[in-house]
Image 1 (cartoon, helix red, strand yellow):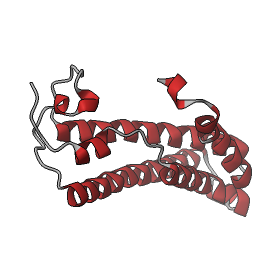
Image 2: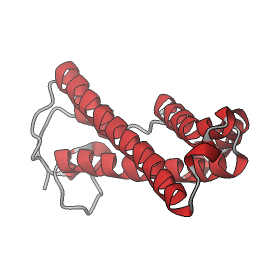
Image 3: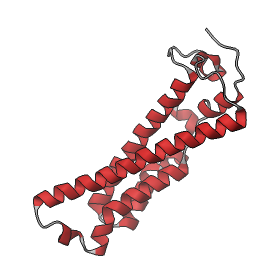
Length: 168
């Protein structure tokens, strides 16, 4: 069943398809920088005298990048929530998802706020995928500029090449 709510803010937040260029470019740049910095400076060999240090070092930069990605997604969620709450005066957080025209045929029994959180979790999974792939590319290439170009080609250019309607 549906609630009669003012849909403008919820539709703007949940109903629009967006590609967050800034976050993707920041994540790829940060990932490539952290992985390739020691290779380019030449301190990589000094830090990795033994196999144990090498494994610890890799774990540290993987954890740094994952924590940065997690914090960026959380900041993005809070900023969007505050923005849409002030601009559109969001209300009825517990209203069913089917109250929005965009999701009127949805079978998920979740509230609007749960849908917003679910969308952020899916965004986090996408960002973590981008982080992992960009780390792998940067690790094998070992050059920041080249790995940035390769990652840009892998993630951003396909979005422009393919018609978004054909991907649905």
